[in-house]
Image 1 (cartoon, helix red, strand yellow):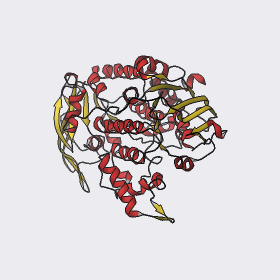
Image 2: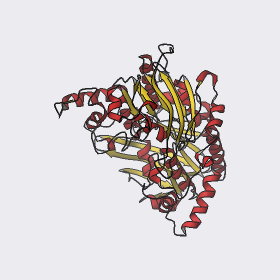
Image 3: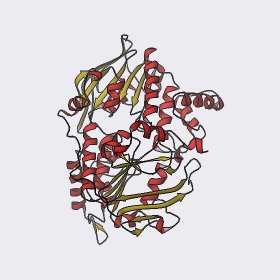
Image 4: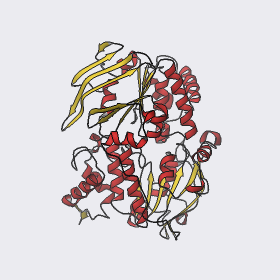
Length: 505
């Protein structure tokens, strides 16, 4: 590894009621893959936004190649050679993939040339994209691919990556790691943020750990266990989730029979003969690469998209295929969509108001057409306490929370209602190891109480940790489920990487 490419000295940044960064020192050397670790709200996102010029520090110094600099904005950062893949997307939904890439890298040439280059780079990194696909029809995973490929097109000297493997199979993640190691060997510095501690240990040579806005440790993650890294982040070792009861076979609480739906969007995926049965106390994991029908399946199960026949989907024996989300919730179902901003929560509303959206009936938060504000606030505060949501309390606007803290609130809102059937898409996306264990334990407790749970996730570690059985969704078709104890991550990963949407087309 070479000399320090980037140095931060005593960086401080405060927001109303929150000291996000408190005297942070950090150096990243040319040619190294450096992990930035911390629980949700530790200050990681604020720090990297300062590096990329999105935010200005209140005090402190940034040094680039040994010289003090004031990074005035993302364009200035890119000119210096800094590229960033955000966890939350900076893309325009009404534009195509290639148009978004052109805007993001200040492209001045012909779109046809960029289209060819985009296809080459996305293929080389194993992140397939259709250049002319309109973004509003893409899944969350596919949108993240746009951010990754757009950044790689800039050939940066410092590459900041925030949760880049959340949409990849294990095999694709390994291929990306090999590429990152090769890029680092050529002198590019990589600042890598991930809540997957196993991949941090496999990929990174050095780690800086933050807690409550401060740097609390620096270590070589290859020489530390995942438990030790989690303890450094949290200040204590997290408790491993565990089942209280052995799952017992029983009548299905959620049943889907031969569900077929045409693609609603031009670049969507049609569902073909999807069948599943989940009994009380059972957790079914549905794995798959983003863009293979996960969003369409979630929409069908939640009632946002109606089924051709009522009998196609049943909750506790009641045919609900033609019913909407409200009617399905009235029967005891709950749903956690993968996109927290705008779908699971309204950014401009407070947490109390967001709690009302899906819980008003089950928690009796509306009486005679009037909102019971005291009960609503108390419900929101109960979620905040149980799931350690940090961000200003029940009256804080959702948009002012970090992504991980909002995710904890959204998940908590549904779990605290104690539904009989729960469908959760990416329930721990973007949250730290300790919070993920809290969510996993809450899911296990809900199953122990007799609920039927479906977890749609690209995180195979998550599925293998908490699910009883696993099925793979590929090109809109769901494989028969197999018990988790009889499956392997490698075999499931190969199945996930099989018939993709592109291959089907």
